[in-house]
Length: 233
Image (cartoon, rainbow, N blue to C red; front, side, top):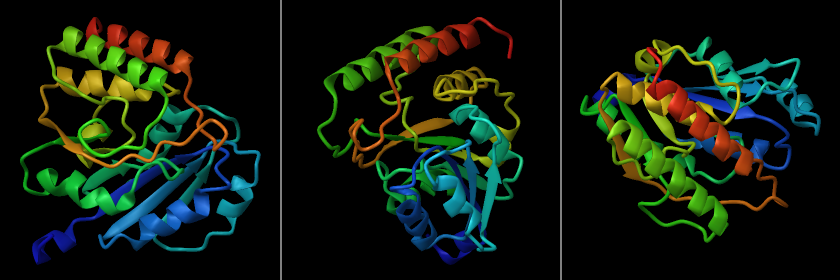
């Protein structure tokens, strides 16, 4: 980044649900990134101590919002967007699968006004060996989306998505679950926005380590792709 870029505020949106084993570490990593930034965390009614830890945070650059009932990732992101003040909005999970040190490559094209949205693709760079059926599911979802929308996505299910803030705030979102990833992708494409993918690292965790997504979320993603393809919004 050059000196001009230091005036840009990046809003990092972090949905969190039962991540007590990683929440401290990931917040520390996010705040260590050398960008002008704010962090908006939405606790989605955690029950493992995450909620109590978040209540103890007192940092003017961190906003914490609490859901009274578990509503899902999409709902948490919608809540966070009400608090975003930055020029760029970036989504960060509350685990350690993605590396905040790679924010720079996610926002570079937006800063240069060459992109409206940038996805960090796990399949274009180094990645931890992880579940074959997750890989297969991702490929099926990407193929399905690419056929429906005549696109070339390699990883629409990635957590790392960076947007011009006005872009994401102007899109009506409805999915409460992991279906957010498919819904936002479909609606971005239908608006003919400039979407790029860049390589990122990925350190996938196991279910024993707290991974939450399942095959049911794949079905939900396909539903949202079809719904958005044939709807007006």
